[in-house]
Amino acid sequence: MPSAEIITIGTELLLGDIVDTNSRYLARCLRDVGIDLYRKLTVGDNVNRIAQAILESLSRCDIIITSGGLGPTVDDPTRQAVAKAIGVDLEFHPDLWQQIKSRFQRMGRIPTENNRRQAYIPSGAIAFENPAGTAPIFILEHDSHLIICLPGVPRELEVLTNQIVIPYLHQYYDLHETIKSRVLHTVGVGESQIDDLIGDLEELSNPTVGLAAHSGQVDIRITAKADSEARSEELIQPLEATIRDRLGDWIFGADAENLEEVALRSITAQQWSLTVIEAGLGGILTRKLAALQSSFIGGQVLTDPPSAEELEILTDSYRQTQKADVGLGVSMVQNSQSYNIYFVLITPRKKHQTKRTYTGVPEYAIMWAFNQSLDLIRRVPNES
Image (cartoon, rainbow, N blue to C red; front, side, top):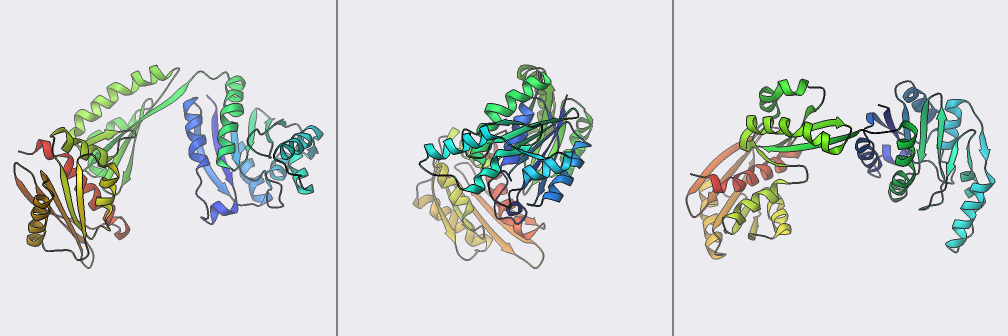
């Protein structure tokens, strides 16, 4: 099975002026056709550094895909960098220049002379017209490797990947495998505790199991490679069942499911309604739940965090005013080196108070408290 690396090109990416979405898109496309992605790298608009990155990738993998640097300006150096890396010259292709002029004509514009640069590609490369933009792309077969150069504009890259790159890879490598992933989401348990419970499964080779920790949430990724999506699913299912058995209700969902949707679903299933009082969270709880509507009927964001006793009174009063079945109150208070988060949960069955302490990175405190709050809501139907 071939392996690949992605090189995104652009100084604006290194400066953080724009977010790289191309790597994510390409990675998923490669995964879907069973190609192993080894590395993703970002390089600025410098011919020598791009050429060096290409040479390094050639020593490690079969396929190199670049994005960016194919425009008409001086700081679009990908064509020159590829030619430099493999030791060939750039060649002018009159047919590409005609394609570029024709596209400009359809747009009612006249290309400038610098657009002519886009008709130069490394000697030996195969050029493809760009139906979504002015920059032609090219694929270079070099010593059993493929160098595929795509534009950096996401819309153009996606069209070209689907219409040209993936079919080309299928034919070139006679691809028959696919890689499928299932992501299980957990809350209320730490990464180290999960690792202690399923660490033996993380040693498997196919399917593989990996952990990704977030603030107040840990994801478990199961990835399987097989000759069809159905066969990949057959490999994933028994392993997923084992993980669910070991971790129980710490798992709240999978793949695209998010915690706020799951939490509100548990309230809706009881035919209940929910109100929220929050302080110190910047209004994120009210904002996220309001976007989903459903069984959420109102929230209040307090400027000053109340005491635990005041929080209970305020939560119950607002719940009754809104005629809601469930009221949640959350108040986060910062100390010198930690945060104390006070919770009040009032349902038709009981009233529950608890306090939790967050000692991690301050920037993640709000999200941690947000996830803990939602975890309380989703567990309401299971309360005794």
